[in-house]
Length: 447
Image (cartoon, rainbow, N blue to C red; front, side):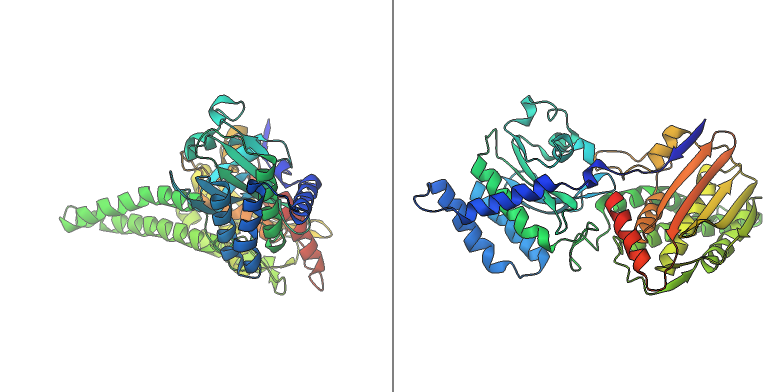
């Protein structure tokens, strides 16, 4: 049976008009508040007026920080955070903690393991005591952040596209009132016009240009083995324990492990540029991309006894970043050494399946990958409490992110015993770049 890994539309990315409507209604209720007011309402309104309204034109990271401080002070909670939905996970963009465990910026938790993922689409999530209520009791997020009471509202960007969530954590079991919910909706409404639909922000804020903490953890996990090998050989060399006749072999192995460490470092550096705001003003030749990647990997494939065949069917051009596209294709080719070591032939092909799309394809004749393994390899980055799946590295994650940034997509098909085929599909370059921009917007909405 053929296994296929092709991330489809996420329910978290579907438009949530109800969330926008609730935010507007909440803002209206705040504006229409009039005396006599309860002390609770007066307190909420005074906090918004004092801590947020004078600073709406400040840089977005500062506005988010002040918004969280406002919520912590006004609601007397132990923590508040903003998190964005990215690649099937909820990633912490910013957080303020008054007491209790600090919430790590960049922490990623699979969306289905979070309160936002367990709640009703587009509706506030208000939980008095998560330890006593299903389905929140067993959520990994509850244990990871030591959550008792929780109140969260969805955040959407200016065009109504879902962005993530704004939430507070109570100090103990607590019923959050309708006015508390309104306050969160108001704050979310003040933040949302400043956010971009691609999951980033309007400027170079901490979230948009930062490599996810989970990616750094995964990089640390990946370099452990090559660094251990390098350290071992270094100790042997320092003690003159390597026979002269074995020096060439040791040198080759040291060079190979050093290249692995450098490649992982390059991956982290490249991901620091994602999510990417491409200007789509540079035409990139996919033939040049394919040839450059093939030249880089050919020697290693020759040494491994693997025949590399290159088939370039078309003169394909796309709008985008040549360095990132080459890095993505490099990962498709390097994947052969990780998951198809018994392969004897690898084919790199450039084709045009439709008038407005190009595909870079890497096919091997290795043992193939099961459907379960493909799902793991193309799944979200592991959270802090998870161990990476065997073979799950930064390469395929980088591949998917680069594809999405260029308005394309990446996936794989595999037949056990017959080999694996990886695809990178990209929109063809249009004369003015409009087609690429439209494709990119659609891809970001699906990501």
